[in-house]
Length: 241
Image (cartoon, rainbow, N blue to C red):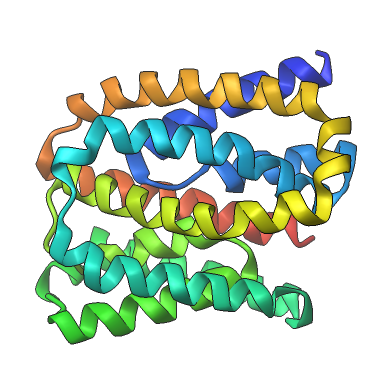
């Protein structure tokens, strides 16, 4: 299998997962591209298909956005994520990844065993949870997973959950893209074919995932999110070996 074909298939899967869970594109594509172009350039390169797929996903779900959750949790999560990202290089990544994965497993277990459904955050609590989850996600370099994990404590229905997570991701993308283009613009041009393949795959996956999301019953949606969080946590633990 050629590397370009692997990127195409992975980006399709990433777009589909993100359309269902609100996270997954960076988690799946960044490690794959880093094998070919290095971690730093991979992070910048993946931001392009991430932005494209996230924008399309938001257009699909914009009428379902929960503005109250977005103004409190979403804005705080984006601000915390950008702050944490600034400290990403100074953090002890291996230890943090273990803690991060453990938090994802805890959030998933809380949902699977019904504990998360007994918690309902106030506006102030959502603000704090958004800021802390965003900061920690930015510090580790994986904001989407911890964002969705924290959002399990919000009383959001399926489409509102994904729409709010998506709008939050767009805020982060809007802030970080100018930085990436300023710092790595020339290098990004050098890997433009890979970026084009990844973007096309992520967009195709987004449309497929949107159809899949509509077929997931409301009662099962949070269990699906919990299962995907477990997969992400196990992948992060395996990746550090």
